[in-house]
Amino acid sequence: MNTIIETKRLILRPVSMADAQDFYEMDSNPNVHKYLGNNPIKTIGQSKLWIEDILEQYQEFNIGRLAVIKKDTNEFLGWSGLKYERQLREEFNYYDIGYRFKEKHWGNGYATESAIASLQFGFNDLKLKKICAAADVNHTASNHILKKIGLQHSGTFTYENERCNWYVITDPSLTLP
Image 1 (tube, rainbow, N blue to C red):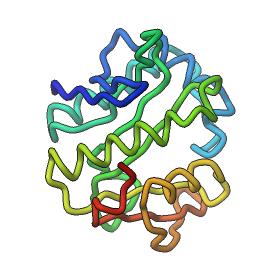
Image 2 (image 1 turned 45 degrees about the vertical axis):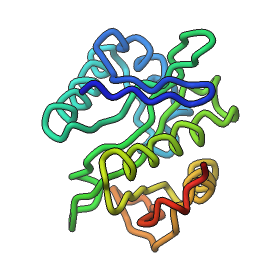
Image 3 (image 1 turned 120 degrees about the vertical axis):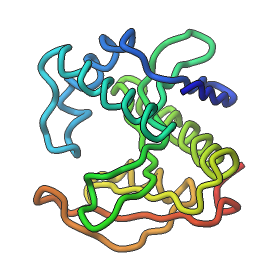
């Protein structure tokens, strides 16, 4: 996959094994995993498994999460983007928008900025008709971002004994410019 998306402050590029240490720094932080099952990773090998999963998405579906790099410093901030989700909702598969950032980069608008760019890419370049997302009902920041970027709340569901909000967007004109 050769997708590169640029925003005012960010470059979204394909993930590679060279990102393993940054993934480890991000995903070993318990605060990052507070609403992701409270199960932070413990080894860099686990980071490599996550990266392998993303690389498989690229091969199988020509889509997947992208590394988010800060333009002015070339620093890895986290990941963002689309993926073809086959596990979260047992009853159907869907195109999912998501994001995860190192804690030190929270609150700077990077998730919003990268997610808007990802939605625009999904609708304009990939010609997707619907993009969905899920967020733990207690994850205030993520729920706020999903609403802010134009997704509409469309109910709740339970995943691994946790209540999640379900979001859908079908009209790309609802997304911010």
